[in-house]
Amino acid sequence: MGWYHAFKNTKINYWLIPMVLALAPLLFFYVKSITQSAFKFRQRDLLHFVPATLVILYRVTIYAYDASQSGFADTQNGYLKIHVDEPIFQPLLIFTEFAVMLLYLAFTFQLYYNYRKKIKYYFSNTYKYELNWILTFLLIFTSLFLYESFQDIIGALIVELSYTQRWWLNLFMAIATIYIGVMGYFTDTSKLNTLNFDFTPQPIQKPETENEKLVSSSEIAKLQELMSTEKPFLNPELNLVDLAKLSEMSRAQLSQVINAGFNKNFNDFVNSYRIEAVKDQLALGKHKELSLLGIAFDCGFNSKATFNRVFKKLTNTSPSEYLKSL
Image 1 (cartoon, rainbow, N blue to C red):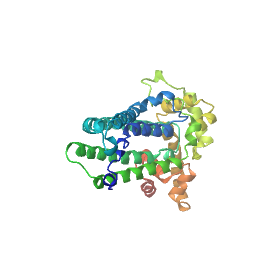
Image 2 (cartoon, rainbow, N blue to C red):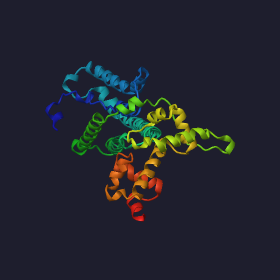
Image 3 (cartoon, rainbow, N blue to C red):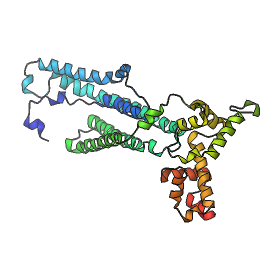
Image 4 (cartoon, rainbow, N blue to C red):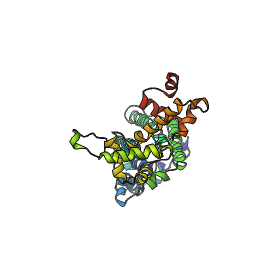
């Protein structure tokens, strides 16, 4: 850009501070704040930003030292910047940032996939809670980060890369950042906050023998009766809290009945009733009046993608193929 030629005594090199050590935990906490209800940033979480703070203090320190040396006003870089920062500290920082970012990305991906797994125990329709835009951003960001790391290694160890060879990466990083900012701003997570994931549903399990029943037959029959008579599954917003109130059980009790009594998670349990309702409507010839999607919406689904995915999962065939087979 000609900056260094126009301002031959600029001190900007001291303040071009790479902040990957701060970006890594910020990304982790951002995803955590969205995927965990009632998230609060605690004082001890500031410890994650100690490495980034030390880098800033280090740069301030070497600037203060170099500024105290004679002739500093007439040059771009002082003694420590030339003999310590660029040949020793910066190459070490590149490898440190790479390791730290990979570690936090692994934590962030794990956090996201655990969330995706958990919502199936709380929501009957998970499509709008899957937050696919987070996964899209993480994949894009990871790809750009790996390329940037590869680029930095080449620039530090093999051949120096010019600004014109590097600038486009900053552009795409900016676009990715704007993307997650806009998507996050317009995503309504209030339903997640009111649900409060304050207990972890037990995994699906079967008793080893008939004498080791995990739930009573009366609880199973009570829930079956509720689903058959009141048809709460027709409500597309049905969640674990709603069904627990209708069945007069606690969330933990209802989750246990569904997981152990029906060998399903909450999502599969409710959607199995919706699929049966769709099949009943098709058997009655309802498809002559409504589209398949219209029937699916009447039976409690709220997205085409979820309906097709669930129908295929539970019947081993697509809705259109099933209709042809009637």
